[in-house]
Image (cartoon, rainbow, N blue to C red; front, side, top):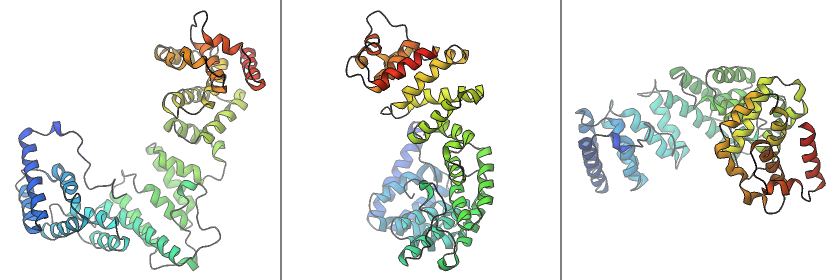
Length: 397
């Protein structure tokens, strides 16, 4: 977490910075680096304050490179420098320095990090969503650590069924009280979302704390509102894990999930597509079209080692090619480069299941020249299952 969240986003294109400003920034970075190596923290702080106050460089233009330079020395120097900056600059840049100080402490000592963010959130950071949000998270984390140290758990400690969220917040039973209160954590997380309603970062943590407090319905409604506003895949996965139904049975959510993530667990993908095939006659045309595009996306962007997606591609195209004109239009846009999936060498080795699936797809979508090895695959010695699959496709045609 401390490596990814920073007070300012990282600049990724120095070409957008005017040459003379870049030279100034590099000179300032070099001088501050030299001062800190000499333990001249006061001079480093004064230089940063001067260039910010005069407007020579904006804080956001120098902050992340500055922290990277100091971090390359050692954590002690960075901590001392940040402490001094926080003390000497109450308005510029207290938020950046205070939050960075919290992240530095978080790398080594949660208790120190808690003390830093608690003091900051009650002072100059009282109206900063990031301060309250991280305070809520670390309160919940410290509570978990204390419960583990004391070996205090119920028989079913975690409130989320889905393993992705199962290891964060233990349910708030009476016998599991610690000096860190989940109610207090929830209050700060809620405050963070009040201060910055557009920020989704703290939503999953807030939901987990709400569920641990027994407020599952409230958490579900909050997540549903968030997801309706912004198709956030983490929020969607949390909704799916809170639903008492099997994941594969959550049709609309599963469609959204597979559309958003071509690397979704293969068990979810296979389970849902198989269910669609079994209930083909009951599926709306819109759903069938969405599933077809999901399969294509899985082939193009998903894990190339998966094989079943080619089986589903063959089954869907055999059924849809003559009944859904949109299918042909979708494929017509791709066939000029999809030929790479049907190159000759792929069909000239061992006839595996995926080779059979691809051969069926190639025969349906590609104009094959005489002698193409696809014909040898489909008329060759197939296993009983492979032969049954090919015959089933031919029967569909």
